[in-house]
Amino acid sequence: MSFEHAPVTKGLMAGIALTSILVGVFDVKHYFHLQLVPHLSQYYQYWRLPLHHLAFSSSGELFVGEILLFNTAIQVERQFGSQKFASFVVLSLALSTLFSFISLLLIPLRLLTYLPPGLHALLFSTLYQHVRIVPPAYSFRILGVPLTSASFMHLLALQLALSHIPGSAVAATVGILVGMAYRSDLTPMKSWRLPSGLVEFGRNWVIPLLGSLKAARRSNRALPDGSAAPTPTQDEVITTSRLSAFTSTQRRQPQPSSDGDTPASNANSVMREWVSGIAGRAPAGLRIPTEAEIGQLAGMFPDVRREVLVTTLQRSANIEAAVETLLSSAS
Image (cartoon, rainbow, N blue to C red; front, side):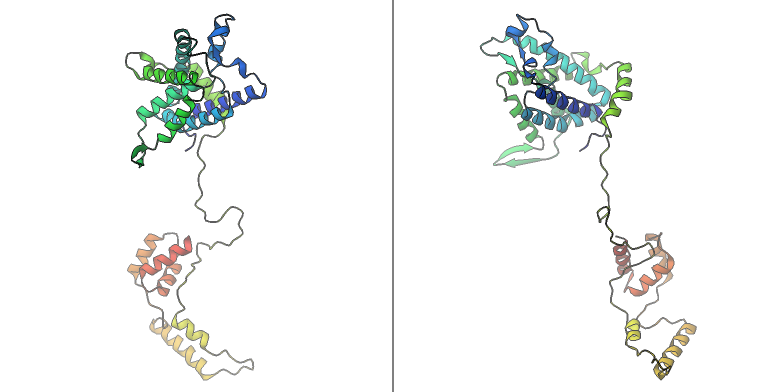
């Protein structure tokens, strides 16, 4: 899986990772959690409401959150489209901020003291959309328990919901409620879109900063880059068949002596070759391919020269063996 057709998810993952790292480096984590008393009720620090979505409090939560975003948000964005998904993210953050504040007001302090920082609500809202619109790829059983391909993501989400109990559980519940409200037909949230000017700004200025979104193309080469191993040319056919009887006979023939004397057998061989050339006969051990075989092989290998096809057919027992020889030489 890659970030192709999912620029909003890539920007969201990069942004939450960057802010979480900066918050940890500068040791300002205490400004990002959401607490009714005393931050909101006494000090009126309402800027904490939108700020608590911008960073996770620990590297473990950041890691789990990035995994959930990568495995759920990419597929949801591809289903929605980037503009609709960006609108969904903005609406989810706004509604989760409102619902979180209402939760702090309604739930007693002895049960809920604070809400942890991070994208808990947005993650569970996106997870709800993923469950509703993306079917599981496969299902299986472990000890009789039915599971699907998305069960492992659900276990990670459960771990995140229980990380800061009860605040994380409340944030997860808020996210699920926001996801249900977004899909509900009672509200027109599904039809709302970001302004076109903001969309053009993001397309022209933000997306180029994210780098390439296309997946890395896998090469079909069997050899690694930089290898000096020789590769056969197009016209070179590598055969693994046994030597023909004609070639073996030629190798067993004695070579002419250095003093210029030529045996009588060499003269007879030259005469036989001359007669065979006039009569149109092939040497012993080589068969004569038909035009139908040559045409059939040329249709399967149009880039190979006719001489190479004829030579391969002559050295092969049938056309199937010739095809295997050409395929093995081209691989």
